[in-house]
Each structure stands twice: as structure tokens, then as C-alpha cells.
Image (cartoon, rainbow, N blue to C red; front, top):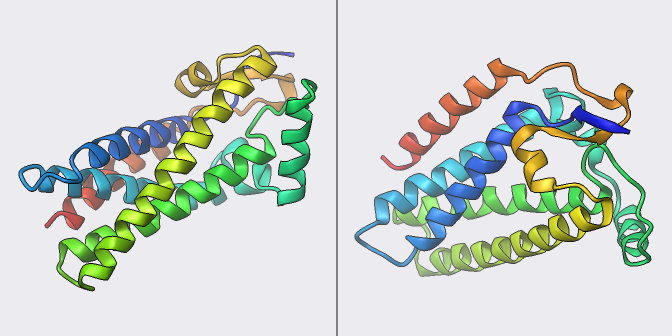
Length: 201
């Protein structure tokens, strides 16, 4: 195997926009002074998650859900192989990471929707509490995801964080994608900006 291009630019850009937006939203969540920043950050996370659903259908090979979403049985089998220090290598996401990504996207949309409704003063106190619970669950899944990145990096002897910056991972030449998808990345930036602005109005 050698270093090949696996993650296109929309995947990498979306990943870091969601990470940054979530951190900002979490930090500003209890501050009335920074409420608009909180809403914009949450709106960005929600917009990126929605775009990622579309990109999971029309994106490059390893961005598509069909490439990495597997059932719980395969995810458990992968985790067992990881504990036995002989996990199979995947050019894209492994089965456990695939389930974590689906969970994060679902929670991002649920958190964003409940937060926006609360911001619009729709739903009352119960919805605000639901927003906090959903966001707490998302934080827990983020923690599991980070742990998986650390363990996966050690198990496969490759820096998965750096791979999400450069887009390059170990793989067979035939597994490489053909390009960065610059147009998809530009559309993502526009979509995220418009989404954050619209939700914060």
C-alpha cells in the first residue's frame, strides 16, 4: 500500500466546519451575550450535516454512504479485531466509524432543529431541555469518535487526523479517488454561510 487520495475536499472541509462549529456552539451555549454566535455556529453545523447527507449520495467513492455504512454486526466484528490488535485496513471509514458518522449527522440535525425552534421561541421549555440532551449525546459520540481516531491511528500506524487534513491515507492505488471536487467544496461553503445566516435571522 501507499499514500493515496481518499478524502475529497468537501468531506475534509465539512469535517472541520462541523468540528469548529460544534466547539464554538458548545462554548457559547450558556451565554446570552454570545447567543447570536451560538446560533450561527449551530446553524453552520446543521447546514454542513444536511449537505453531507447529499454528498453521501453524489460525492466521491469514499464519501458515499454505500462505501462505509455497514450493520452493527460488522461494526462489532471490527471492534473485536481492533482489541485483538489485528484489525483489517480500510482505505475509507471502517464499519465502526461509519456508524459513528451516521450518528453524528443525525444528532447534528436534531440538535440544530431543536436549537433553532428554541431560538424562535417555539416549543417551550421541554424543547430547550431536549436540545441540551441531544447536544450532550452528540458530545458523547464526539468523544467516542476521538477515541476511535486515536486507537485507529495507533493500530494502523497512520495519522488519521493528518489524513483528514491532506485527504491522503494508506491504500491500494485502485482505491484512490480521481480529484478534490473543488466545485463541491465551493458549494458547501456557500450553503453553510447561507444556512447559518438564514437560521440566525
